[in-house]
Image 1 (tube, one colour):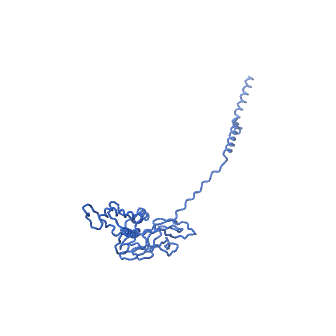
Image 2: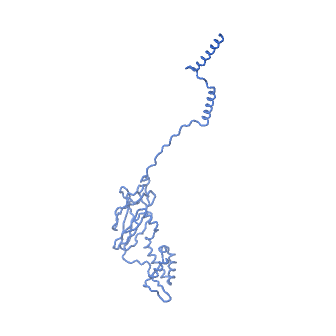
Image 3: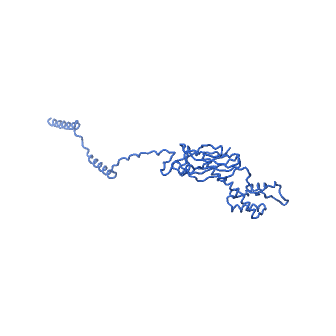
Length: 306
């Protein structure tokens, strides 16, 4: 009986010890692997610190929007804002036309100033005796920057009365201020002559006659048949031939030979002189037509004059 009492006492003590492990405020059991995990974490942290030092996140770049396109360039203090420089022109002074003719005069000008010529710039008819020219008209359909060139093309209708005719022009900026070249009083112009007489392009050039074994072929006697034959076969003289005197002599001799003609030296020289005179009149109308039409198109000009 005493033995059994001792056994119950020991069982009660063991139960109290087990219950005491769950009492509040009791020490938290220590993880036997905690020290190992902590050491491993510190090692990884140290390795990371050595391999890649702490970096500050880079600031995002500030995007500056590009400046808005401006119609005017930054003024160059060494140059005036508005200044033109003459480059070339068509239809030389003194060119002859029949009464009521319409011709196209062109000037190529360079923007020698520091400001852009805009669509607000104008061409001004300053003075002259050619009627029906607008006093002011639009200069360009686009911007012409400094150092760029502009081709100004103007369709001019001449009066019916013979005589010398001239029209002077200059430019105006967007504010209406007139300008032209280094000398602001200078203008650019068209100066032509209206004539009321026939212009003989080449005297007797078409006097050749077609013949066969039976004699002359029916003709007006004025060379119309040979002229049409040369046109259809493209064997006649061309504008390009007139521009090269040495080549022109050879071409003319070959045409004489084709039509059975054998002129002496004096007659040949006279013919060449007549053709040279004709070329002086015609050269103002000779140009690269494809380039001309493109320039008209880019400037918004009419390609057909009514």
